[in-house]
Image 1 (spheres, rainbow, N blue to C red):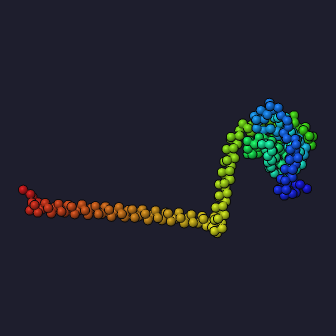
Image 2 (cartoon, rainbow, N blue to C red; image 1 turned 90 degrees about the vertical axis):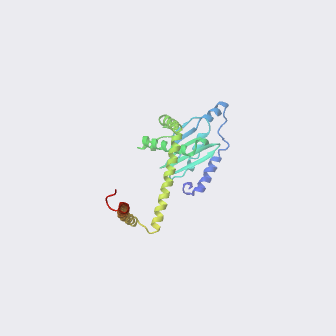
Image 3 (cartoon, rainbow, N blue to C red; image 1 turned 30 degrees about the vertical axis):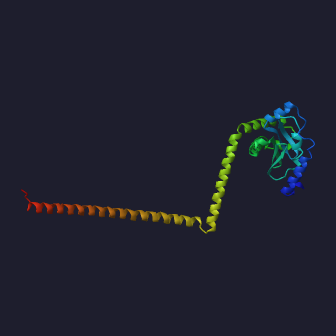
Length: 256
């Protein structure tokens, strides 16, 4: 069974599935349709239960739905994200709990933006239909109700693309920092230094610092007293010398 096969074999089968539609291309388009394609970022999206498409929305007329939906039976049973590139468009899938969420976007949109859309689409769909309605819904029976919602989500993600990219960058930085911290903790554990040892060392360092401060203060006071003593001695010597000079000149305390 396909779903139990290794990832690399699954990818090969998925490629064969999609390449079987090479003859379909993306449909024969007029000049106006091609111009519209250049302006649309998200092209097509659907939500499916197994291989049954429950709701879909598209901005263009073409064979995107046929290409995307025919690959449903090749998606893995486990929760997984997958991206397939064809004709400068990315086909992004999110499989989770027996449901598949798909978005077809221009290659320039970027995978992070498509993933953000799929996560938003999944959360909204599960919130609306998680109670069981989706489990028994017929094919495309949710189009009228959920199709306009999918369009709104498309527009929201495109309007907030820069903000989403910044959030992903922050998340990457946080992940990198977390990895660095985990590596440092692992190194500490490998050296046999547990948290208690580190705490004891911290206390020892604090005690040593306090002791050093006390000794430093004592030395400062001692140096100050010595300095003052030296100054007093110098003053006394100068006074004695001045007195001697006075007495030698005046031959006494009275000088005439």
